[in-house]
Amino acid sequence: MSKLLVFNPDHDLALASGTPNYTAPPNATVIANDLAHLLCWSNTNDVVVSNEKCVDAYRLLNGGCSTTSWKQLDVYEMVEPWGWNESIAHKLRREHVPTHLIPSESLLQEWRNNAHRRMAAKLAECLMNHDVLMPNPAIELFTIEDLEQFVNQHHQVVFKAPWSGSGRGLMWCNGELTPQVRNRCLKLLTTQGSVMGEVRQVVIQDFALEFFKPHDGNAMFKGYSVFNTSNGVYKQNIVGSQTYLESIVTRYVSKTLLSHIIEQSIEFINQNFPTYMGCLGIDMFIYECQGCIGINPAVEINLRNTMGNVALELANRWLDPQVVGTYSIDYYPNSHDLLNDHYLRSKTTPLEIKEGKIVGGYLSLCPINETTHYRARIDIVANRKGL
Image (tube, rainbow, N blue to C red; front, side, top):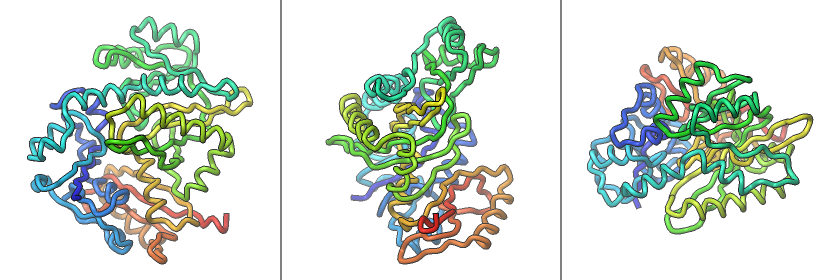
């Protein structure tokens, strides 16, 4: 069955707009063009919307995806964007993709409602375990007075936009609601109806559980994603075997607890997102509080594909299970600086492939040329035999 893959990384912004006529900001369009080939690495024998061919290393690794332009989209039997929203659905209709391949308006609205951050708070309530240190679930706040009271009560807090992702839409407060945060929250209360409030924690390790839910079946656990952030903004993933990633998380919490969280999360997904289909990830973190280690089991639910899922697929499909690396997204304001860095890395740490698997070096997952500003790359940093 031929499947069309569309990279729309502005999905969270489109959800926040809630309109089919949403216009992506210029940088989002650049990201979509520069990183479209990411989808090749987590799929097989499908077709990615891009005007560029896949990188040479993809062919050396016997990758099966190909590329097509926006002018050839009416011959596919399935369509799978990074995330479904009214904007991408409207765009696909304009490009003559058959209507029966695009979710209905009612489904799109249902999935948008499910992507609201209040659902993560609802999951957190379901996962509360009084034998384990966990923070109170986020609270939905509807007025500036609610926000002021929350800051006065908890002092160190973070406010979050109901629809946002990848660390965007976060506002930090240290004992007071500053004019800047107040103005941003006022806008959110007007445009999105509420703001989510959480007590800020000292994060030790970010990670996520990655799932896939088929159209007519129950959700399935795919694996762990372990990543790093700065003030909630995504920086990079660790890529390695699932055994290795699990060992990072179980330094802090037990495998028994993780298994319970996975089981409860699957049950929650099946009950609360019955019509949803595709990838989804649940962000979590390990934190320290007064000398004790705790876990926040439901920071965010991403009803879409995720960088964590891409990192998971990269490791499972293309990396030797003994190596460990990083998966990063770079931005260069000057495209020539990126091109020069690409040439330098390719020369100083060339890609090493052995028996169809990556065993060392640097790899840009997407083409780099004179106009590229964003890069997705892998750097192999260690062989576990030597760790």
